[in-house]
Length: 221
Image (tube, rainbow, N blue to C red):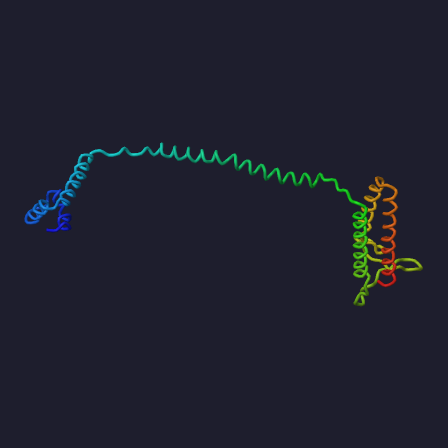
């Protein structure tokens, strides 16, 4: 009998079920093979310990205590991360609030070139919108039932309908112009004479350009 066959029969030997010719061959092999003897002794020790502790079982875990430990662990982790999250949210809110506070509380100071450019842009926009509005409302209509609106008197003047009322000069953005004129009048009080003169000269050029545009529009709508 070789070692492989001996180790296959080792389990039956320990259980006491090995008999007959296999038992004789097994015993003969153990006489000559110290390695298999060592394996047999280790198996006997393992089986002996198992038999001795067969009646002893580990106490079942307390499920309530286990869940309490899990919950406590989770709460500790949450408490640890909560200040960091609160600090991050506070920093983000402060950043947003600070941005809007600076934006809303900022005092806008325009220099003379910036203010003149703004007024010129408004004037150019008003002229453009007026041109488009007059052309849209006073163009030659198609169809026999459409009549052109004209002013009354001995010298009829072409007009347009603006916000439900008749406007003889075609001004559709007078409100915006009045608003900016008021803003400029309020700011001019804080300017020095040199700045006011420069601004008045710039506005004179702008007004002249607007007047030329309106005259051309009236002559060739």
